[in-house]
Structure formats: structure tokens, C-alpha cells
Amino acid sequence: MSTERIALIDYGAGNLTSVRKGFVAAGAELFTAQSPADLSDAGAIVVPGVGHFGATAALSDNWRCAIRNAVDRGTPLLGICLGLQWLFNGSQEAPDVPGLGAIGGTCVRIVADPPLKVPHVGWNSLHVIGQSPLLEGVEQDTHVYFTHAFAAPATRECVATTTHGMTFAAVVSGDNVHGVQFHPEKSGPAGIRILRNFVAIAADAV
Image (cartoon, one colour):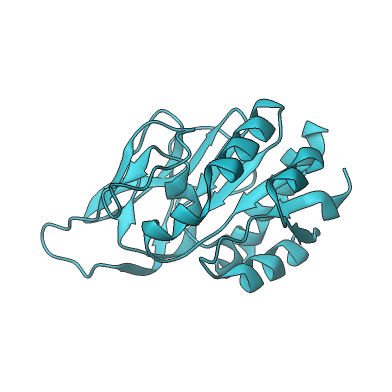
């Protein structure tokens, strides 16, 4: 696969520069898709994002359809942070905004009892509960960097969880759809390893 054919989706939700740098460190460069048609020959797709789930409303029906069609063709998809949450049906943070619906379930606000600081910001450990090529070489209890107030449920696609007051999906992986709640580009060598694994998944899909 030509690594420059990994498409980065820019819907105005930030952190594109750091995601690009992370993938460069992982041995790949991303191109920014200018229109849904650009996804027709993409080797993989990355949906990043930080902040409010409402920002994903910028991903119109045309974008959603193009991404779904690409996944159906076998194109690997990676959601990062807010991008992982968008893979689900939706979020309580913006109930009127649909997610992609590639994974069933709704994201909810983190509830910590006893009280912990929310948003969940900082390093936390991964509890690996399943197998995925995305986690190849990532050890149990590896620490990665989070920043979020809402989280996705640990559905059957969940292969790693994290606990901050409540347990939630930290990594999801199923068929061609993958996602990480944390920021791999800010998570040191382990994060770069996960991005490198995704590049390898994309190469194998060709």
C-alpha cells in the first residue's frame, strides 16, 4: 500500500497536526480528504477529534455514506478520541447528532463514585481483554494519555478497557473498524506502536 493514501478526515474538531506527526513517526503520511469522493481509493481512513460530540455533525450524510461504503469494501477505519465515540450510535453529549453506527451503543458522561475529576485527563492504564492486531506488542497495563469527559461502553468489539470512576472502552476492534479513546500520538512509544500497527493493518488490507 502507498502510505500517502491513508485519508485523514478534517471536520473541524482539531488535533490534526499532532495526529499527522504521530503517523509520520509510525512511518506513514496522511492526506486530507477534500471530499467524500476522495475516499474511493483510500487505503485506510482516520477520524480524529477532540471536544464536543456535536462537532461530528459536520460529517454530513455524504461523508457518512462514503465512510460506510469504504469500510464495506474492506478499507480499515481508525477513530481517535472523539473519533472512537463517533463510531458508535451516538452520545448523550449531543443526543440529536448520530454517530456512524458501526458499533452499537451510546456514549455517556463519565460518572465517578467516589468523585474523581472529570474530564478524565492524563495517563491511565490499558486493561487488555481481547485480541486485535491493533494491540500487537502492547503489554498489559500499558499507560496511554487520555482527555475526555464522555466514554463508550465496553461492547463485544472492545479489546481493552480503562477505569476512571467507571470502566469504559479504551480500544475497540472488529472487522475493519478500530478505535482508541486515548491519543496515541501523545502516548509515547506505545502510542506510536499502535499507529504503526494500524498502518500494517492497512497494508495487509490491500
